[in-house]
Length: 580
Image (tube, rainbow, N blue to C red; front, side, top):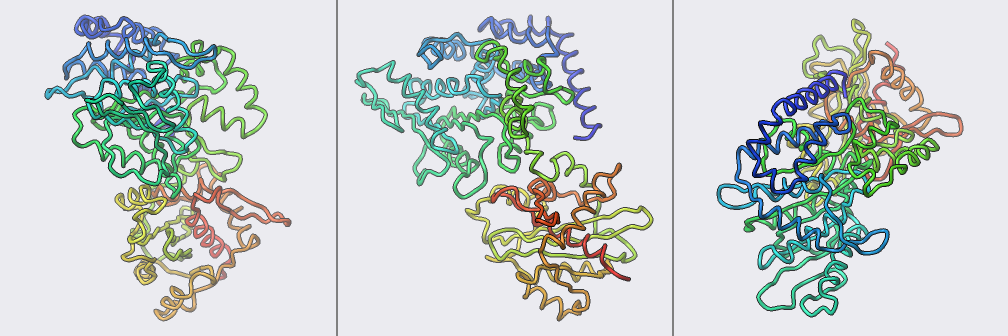
């Protein structure tokens, strides 16, 4: 995040806080009936406005949005009260056994915002919910309650689904639902309570609750009324774990429902290339007023831009149940433990501070640094045919291919690098990264090739067209993967500039160290084209060393691609070794 972006967020928080404080009494008088639904709604709002340092920007924006919606929609106090009463009558798991709990003010506010607003046609306004909180916020009991409520009081044929990426995670929430229903019907006279399904035995009501996982073999025939996605931030777009697909399957089955509800309950993770990271960024834009969708409720608990991670004030800001479901000394003990290793600190930041974080000790570049290197460089606006090194890394059909173009400006004493990414359109369906790649393609960041495999003629044509604007001095490639494209380019007259680039540690050591030097100068002396796939590739890299201390980037995991980094480094290597 740039300093300018941080400045804007600081100003936004200051403005929204001051506005709410100045109109607080007027808003309370105007919406007295809604606030009277439960006194804890006002207690929660007062808690924010009286203690601004303990609450983040998005909590204040959520309060503003609440009052804006009260101006625009009808309020259903009965719907809120009924659910509060039901929750406080049920028994949930706890450290001393199963017991009843009173809802905290923040939980009452969540219930109110989700269930209180009604559209002109009588249906509930809120259809999509994001509860983005650290561990130990009572997420499981909240989710279990929603499923029980839908089972007992939803549509006659309600279908509530509790889903997660892993079976164990999905079962954790579902087991809480089972335990509640066994409390209510210990002899199973009225309900069938199985390992993964709860359904009515009584005639006249066909509602059910079912446990699902992202890799369930079949999800055909669903007619969901409620979809709960637990720990959605862990979802990856992979063949075995496609959380986005599970969510899409469930939501797409809701069409005829009058009051469908999808609830995402999650803590942050190190998966920034999964669906959750982008969706959280999207709901932030809604809360900031940059996008409009009144059917979404988002409760986001995280630090503000200037917060110190070791400050108890920050801990209270990110964990609204500190002192309630989390002991006061828990965070201080965990922060001390986090100082012992990068792995501990990663867990502290993701699970307790609720920040999407890549393990900085393992990755070559942080997300922020990688983003800083990308800018408004457009290779197709370069003039006077400057010397340019090109390199390509090809896949056949299963993943994207990359082609990088790098030039050096003597006038600016800077390197500029542009990378194009290609993918065969016929391989998108059911690809592990389908959702991510389709989003990139729709935004123009990923070029799609017709058919089932990479179209090397399309890539060759793009290189030859660029040659009219650029003075291509070298075209580097991996000789084991590129014979067809090399042949096409050779036939087109590029034989003299084609040069294999062996993929050894020794060949990558110079460009790796050169790129680090260029990237970490202030300001950086290399600029990449503004494409999120560049950031994706850079943050997926770890630097490995051989026994001679030669460095080469490797993938951080099997799920991550680094092809654009490899080709960019190949071009830097060619530029540094090129003899005029």
